[in-house]
Amino acid sequence: FLGLRPDARQLLGIMDVYVQPSNGEGISIAVIEAMLARRAIVVSDAGALPEIIDDGSTGLICRVLDAADLAGKIADLARDPERRRSLGERARQVALERFGTEPFVERMTSVLESEPNTGLNIQGKESSGI
Image (cartoon, rainbow, N blue to C red; front, side, top):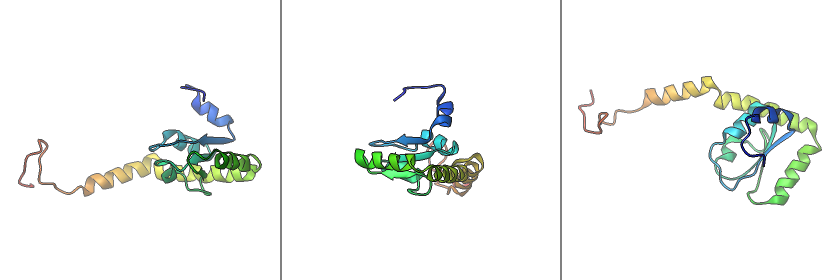
């Protein structure tokens, strides 16, 4: 663990594999950044990580707290540069499709435009719905 680093993006550029084993994780910006950097990625099946990484397509998923499974997946990628490259390319493509600016704005706009009238005004009091 390197701690807080202002040069994290540069470090991603020199990695062959980005690994984020976790016991519990929300939506990980670090994983999305690794996807955008075209890194092969290994994450654990904890929290929201499996929602970001598609096992075998955009990265590899190991069982949480299973060091042998984690080590095996890292070793497999270490031996296969073509697989690292293809996982990294697919990860970037998916990251741009799912987390890029345009898709985000489109999804948010859709949510905001489809929000039903709850019958409450800003102060939380009933309104006429007009």
